[in-house]
Image 1 (cartoon, rainbow, N blue to C red):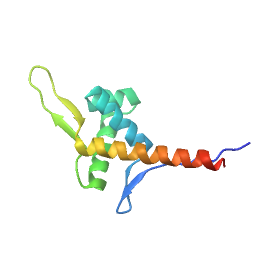
Image 2 (cartoon, rainbow, N blue to C red):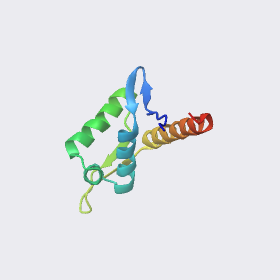
Image 3 (cartoon, one colour):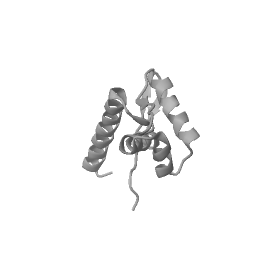
Image 4 (cartoon, rainbow, N blue to C red):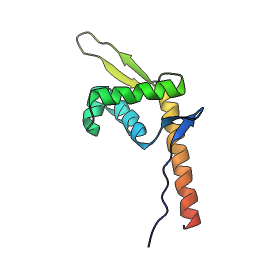
Length: 106
């Protein structure tokens, strides 16, 4: 038997903002407080991760991370309020679609 599957992504003005891969990257940044560590955790290069963050910013028109340069302790990167709101919106909508598909038994 086959199953119906769907992929969810958010767009703004026809430009992709956030899908599953970018959402995982934002989650990893939030957990690791580092783009480099998040990239390593997900098996991607720092350059690729940084490029994805820039694509989100370009599509959304605003930044989703806050980078803090640090002296002795080193720097860190974390999600800003826009990033947290975007990630919540993505998962809220993805879960809503999952529930619709479950109810439809397709």
